[in-house]
Amino acid sequence: MEQGNDTRISEFLLLGFSEDPELQPIIFGLFLSMYLITAFGNLLIILAITSDSHLHTPMYFFLSNLSFVDICFTSTTIPKMLWNIKTQSKVITYEGCITQIYFLILFAVLDIFLLTVMAYDRFVAICHPLHYTVIMNPRLCGWLVLMSWIINILNSSLQSLMMLQLSFCTNIEIPHFFCELNHMVQLACSDTFLNNIVMYFAAVLLGGGPFVGILYSYSKIVSSIRRISSAQGKYKAFSTCASHLTVVSLFYCTMLGVYLSSAATHNAHSSATASVMYTVITPMLNPFIYSLRNKDMKRALKVFFVRGTV
Image 1 (cartoon, rainbow, N blue to C red):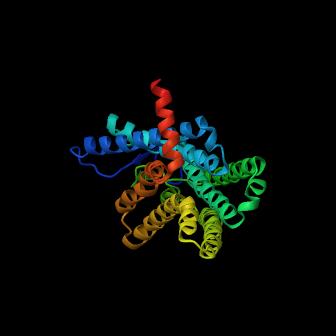
Image 2: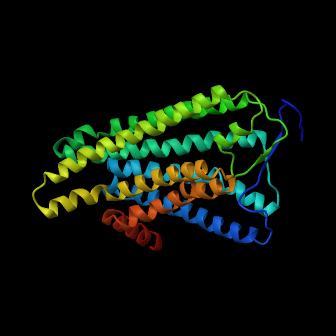
Image 3: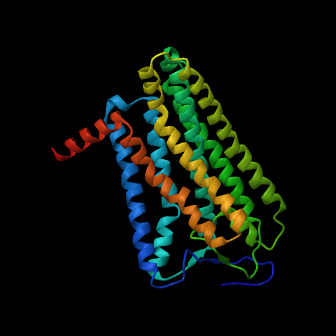
């Protein structure tokens, strides 16, 4: 491992949650369980949607894409952490760290974009029900997902390329269980002004912009629901977006909580623990939220399992 002033190093050390050897098997078992639940739960959502023609609608098309992104999101961090615990090694290569940053940014912001697209879908369904099939046609749905991918590939490529311009000195310890962009920028010993500008600008534009779009969509949805005369009609309209609203609240609240807690405590290990909420817990809970609160998904999953046993 090369170390020195203003030089490129070949490896970093991921410190993880705890250095206590007795806790490592517990952490390994816990995160392996959560990873398997996340992967199989989201995979079941995808298989149920693709196998049931009744679910070939814009809402479930976006949901299947969200499930795929959630699998990729957790797969970016958890397998490496499990491998490090298993091999009793904390090492991640420089190239591996940059690659992890690239995919973390890609899938994290893709989650936000897909949640925004799903909010727009619910807005059209409730506020313009007569024009829903015309507006949310397959071509538009495909373009919305494709543009989300293109924008985020460009963003993550830019952030990763800018990371490659930084130099690191002797401090190669990352107080986290994955390579997180903000931590890596703080570890650099070269000038990070431009990196910080781009990082915060992207956070406001690609994180705050979609959030404003979600708020606008739901303000219109609430106004439309209030104009419905019957209580049954209001409940039916609200139930179509309850699952999505739950996921949005969970994702944004946990992500906001992570950065508020890290800013308040300045404790890296507390930040790492809080990061588990949006990197692991939220993707794990999404399949339960969409299946337990959705009659169509329950029926599709039941049919899928019946077909599997035949």
